[in-house]
Image (cartoon, rainbow over all chains, first blue to last red):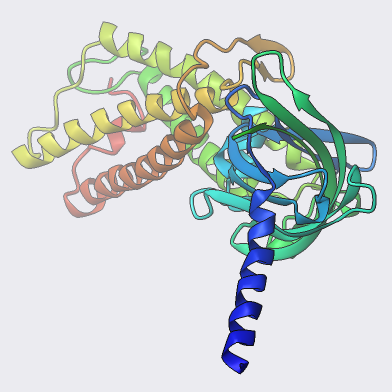
Length: 192
Length: 182
């Protein structure tokens, strides 16, 4: 009797864990460049310096009927940092900042998505940057989803987050206003 | 007096030699110092500007030096020098010339990698000519750094060799780079 009960429990559990896999899987459209990983850092307290990572890849799962099961994983090529200034980019790639020779990849992997309406929410996950992994929270807003004109199905989101550079081992002092990096994330996925 | 003779160097060659020596050591020291300046240092913008401007000026001086050298008689190596010393001196001098141009060109390629001109002495725009080498600023940066160290090491050897000739061999190798022979 006990054995049958245990077997029933296991099959129910496996059924339950199988559910999130039914959520739609999307590949981030980096081929068509309908996705951007942008950052901004305050300059001296007077303006914003904007930059981006040109090369990254990732995928996400999202089903509007079950938004809390959403998952995201993104990997960034740190060498691809681009702030539209060669000397600054060289400096950012160097040891004062990203140390890209030692840490060529940065990544974000989500843990959970909290949303009340499925349209906006908080995406919790782990950011790995410069070899340091820390929990961050991304404020996410869904932009839209639906059929595209070429026979595919797309969904897109925007997100923002910020963190202290020194939390990831970047100790270069750019001044008190420049301690945080603000990330602006735009991803569009094509359903696989 | 101005020109070289088969016996020794003329005033032009001597003046340029010492001018370049002082400027190169200065540029190397400033280069090492400025890359570690804090963001709030008042030199953060001006030190690289002077480094680039003086480096570009050095390029013009070196172009003149090369032309002058090609138009001049090269003094014969002092006869008491060993054949290996003569060969070593020739190779060392050649390496110094090549490294100087490698350093100046690579430095230019760092600063102009994104197509922006270099503003020489905050006045004259030196345009970007090459911008499409992959990872141009990173590769040029490494070349610039390693070539600069190589130059300083070889130039130190060059200086020590001159002192050895002067104090150990007691010949006129160093003296003839100090004043023109009459």
